[in-house]
Each structure stands twice: as structure tokens, then as C-alpha cells.
Length: 242
Ligand SMILES: *Cc1c(COP(=O)(O)O)cnc(C)c1O
Image 1 (tube, rainbow, N blue to C red):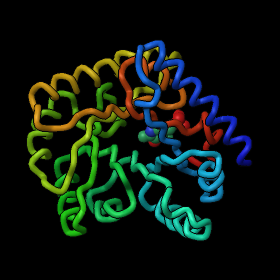
Image 2 (image 1 turned 135 degrees about the horizontal axis):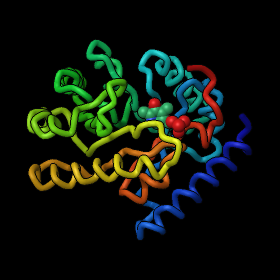
Image 3 (image 1 turned 30 degrees about the vertical axis):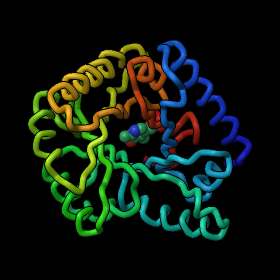
């Protein structure tokens, strides 16, 4: 994909983000756009970087690892180390791969078990870093989705908030695939209500981020309070595989 095409796609998405934010009386600058580059090769990430994108999302630890290495090498060659891409892990992380996400990722959106949180804490602690995370919530209750059920997230948060190498920053969800974006609204509204409730019960925990909204539903998610949207196809076109 050319830098020009990516620049045009990004401008269109940013304009839609801004319009949705205005409708909700929100500041568009308070919304982080994560470009979901899964299935796309390093050259596409590099072109998107040149088009101005800085936040990138990947959902598979193993598929992403060589891509992150290739892009890091390119960044060094470009002498852009002072302004690197910021990587987000947005997909399910198996506990045995916890170690692999601690170094490269700025934010793990998809912490879906206390067991995974404990392992991330252990490896982050060993690496001497504090790892920002979100708790993934399966609001819609679909069996195919990862995440804590809304009923169990408070108990999980009580435990995860004690892990000193993790920094909880909020919640993430995936809406079900529906024919109309409007039909996803109750899921986004429920995640926000859950966050507001947890924020009252855990005043010492930062729950400022709501990662919700993808290509088909991000405007509705922003109207319902999303602070991070994860957008693949509207920026990069159709996925190359899977
Ligand atoms: C693929 C993916 C996205 C982006 O989906 P699009 O419909 O291409 O915008 C967002 N979040 C997660 C967790 C994903 O796996």
C-alpha cells in the first residue's frame, strides 16, 4: 500500500473520529487511534508510519514478533528512534507466551485471566518495568470470545490491582458482529457503566481507558466513551489472511 493511500485513509478515519467526538461533546484529542496491522507485512506498517500513524495493534504474539523486529530495524535505519511506533497487543495471550509480550508492547489490551496477569507481573517485575494493561471483558457473553464476564471482573481486579509490576489503565471489549453499528451500542454502554461502577469501588485504580470500537462500529463506541479505538480495515483494507 502506498503512503499516499494510507495517508488518505487515515485522514478519513481521523475525520470520522473527530465528528463522533463532537457529537458526544468530547475532545477528539482524547481518543487514541490504534491501527490494527495484523496480517499486513512490515512494509505496510512502515508506510503507515510515514503517513503519520504511531499506534499499531497486533493480535498474535508469534505472527507479530518478526514484524516488530523488522520495523524496529527499519526505524533505526531511518534514524527515527526518538519517535518509534507504539505497539499494542490486542489479541488473546496464552499464559506460556506472557514473557514474549512484556518487552515489545506498550499496552496489553487483552488480559483475560488472573493467571495471565500473574505471569505478566512476574516477567515485568523481572524486566524491571511496569507494564500497562487493560482487562478484557466479554460483555456480550458469546462463547467464542475471551474476557472476564461482567460478574467476575471486580474480583479479578481486586487481585490484579495488587500486582505491583502491572499498571491497570482500564477495560477493553469486542462487540459482537452485527448488521448495524447501532446494535453494538448496548455493549459499549455496558462496558462504560461497568467501568464507572468499578471506578467507584476501586478509587485507587486508574480505569480511565475504554478500548472499544473497530472499523464497523467505532463511531458508536466513541459516542459511548471509547478512549482507544482499534481500526484495521478502514486503514489497511481487507486482511491478507484469516
Ligand atoms: C482485528 C481486530 C480489530 C480490528 O478489526 P477491523 O474490523 O479490521 O477494524 C480490533 N480489535 C481486535 C481485538 C482485533 O482482533
